[in-house]
Image 1: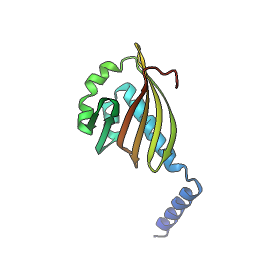
Image 2: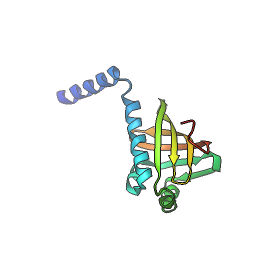
Image 3: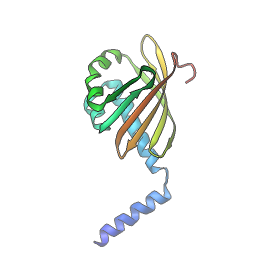
Length: 138
């Protein structure tokens, strides 16, 4: 029982001494997300999404559940051939990470702002907003 108390105290001290740890964990989830998205790794994407996750593409007026998103991956696989995604985290607050992302397709590029609501190691909501038809502002 003492070992359990010692471990809990150590974890609490770590969180208090390093308050950026949850933000770092969220950024790790985001890094894994983009890596899986570019390679269209369905298993990794599925594991990153909470069961009740929602994907919201604001400029298209589309909201997808996890099963709907995963079902769309066959189409995405074609669109993503040769894709490079450059992204940078703009900030993390209250479990929501905001990212500026350039989707650089072979024929065009698109600048997006995306937010990821993350709980633990799972994305519960992803909101995508198109900012520009090019990545000049990236």
